[in-house]
Length: 175
Image (cartoon, rainbow, N blue to C red; front, side):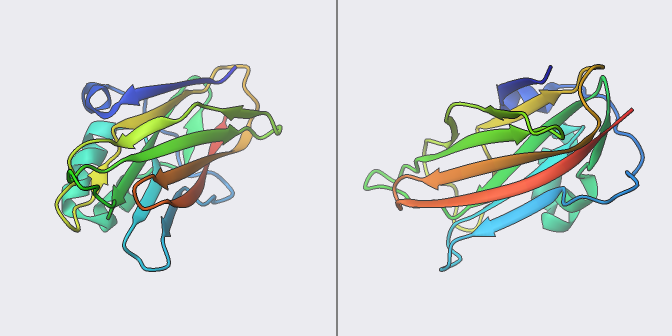
């Protein structure tokens, strides 16, 4: 059974996660980037086994984040989604209002959809800043879960700008 839980980013910073397996036999798209046509609002979805290191890598830029991403997990392991964004539209009070709805599709086609979660609902970050979402998704892979490719879809909405983006990325569950 898949255990999907939304965790505040601050809790993830201190979490110790299990190590990931070696690269799978078939590579999968473990990172996705989406942006609006104007390029002003962008999101990136990736997976990590060490959220604390990943959030530190945000300061170093996208290349460092790609280097820390994970594309495989063994049964009994944990994978964390990492959603970062830039360019949300502030309202008259300089507040952004961005939300996400995560959907997990397992290798056997089972779909788990989570309720909306906050990406950012406070003062707008500095222009151009790559900012981690307020909530992330943690996926625990149990011993009986099917092997194969799992896809996570993050439907992200900037409610002030009335725009939506979808990022899709996958990881492989190994024995």
